[in-house]
Length: 270
Image (cartoon, rainbow, N blue to C red; front, side, top):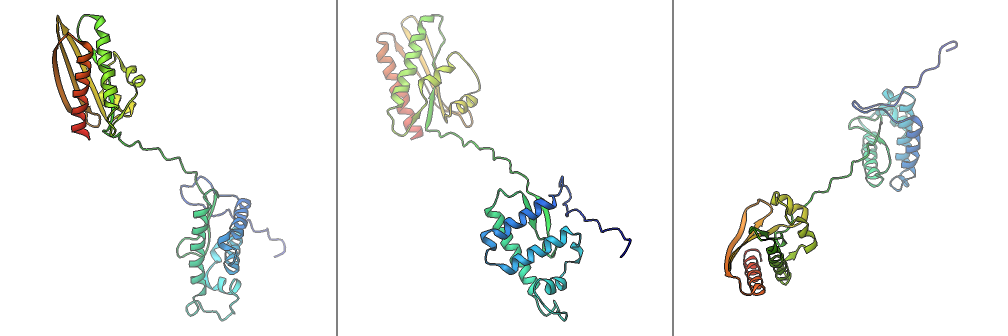
């Protein structure tokens, strides 16, 4: 009418809780991407359906999108069109929703979503929120992965440390000969020499499911070596033993204890 003010274009529909709706320009750009996609390449009628409803919604006429209007303007039905008799709009709307879903399933980088809620012929526009990268879940380390912590010297003689290290290395070498076991490297385990802490946290840091630890005590010519295997998952003891020997041949003692530890773990784990 002369003198009447032009009708203001309403903003695209916005879901509750969404920070903002996509711009009309980005919606039209997304519309072109969809129509050019493989899913719609041979669906001229669906492309017409989609373009018509999007443009009407952007023009603020979403409330006028019903079966009768679409039947006449999109599917060329005459004025006598009766949606109760002719279900073409409902059928094509169902096809359109399915094709849009397939399109977005294969175009996950598209930011603007054009959707048709069930029972509605007016499209809904929203921005696809970026997906946060999934936090990797660390699987519990296998019990067949073993870390041998440096044995602890409980005696007053600091020179006895070489015996503790020798026993540790000999056990490491002996366990490495068991094909079913994976043994954490010496350089990794000796980082914990002289340190204490929760065995479960140590095992997690080393990526081991089983920890072998022990102590060495020497009194005169008597040597006592205690060894224990612990399950990292629950911190419970899997096996333990004490060896009392005369200090005569240190290397023979190391070999004997290492063989005993390896044999016991082979029985309990393998």
